[in-house]
Length: 139
Image (cartoon, rainbow, N blue to C red; front, side, top):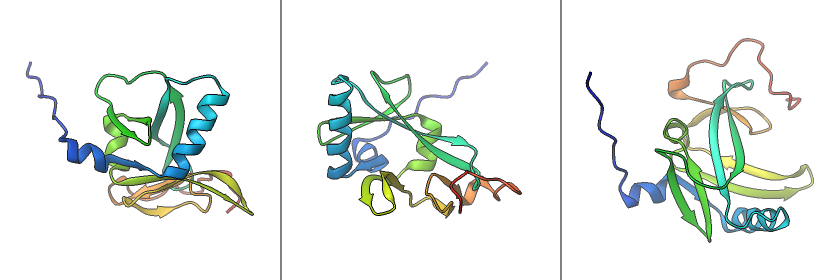
């Protein structure tokens, strides 16, 4: 049985993994403080589903998992697993507050198609969107 060596990500690469805007960091910090979770970070991940084939997910997490990439920006930690990092490399997490609602938005340079609500996307390598799929955003 052969094992594949774990690839080391250079610091410059980690900084390019995911970017957290100052506004998103401020909102996350407020949320963590309100929930009394001062030592937690944000886990960002990609899962199958949604009308475009893949969807974003976020959750608060107390510590990194094995093989996670950890990005520290604006005093906050962002955890990304290796599979999700393939889809999220170079993405920016922002927080928008407008007439149509408020929430976190991911600007992903790897996405070639996205759902109208922005929570579902497709990359060049993920193939075509499933027939009749729906993410429930109403678009």
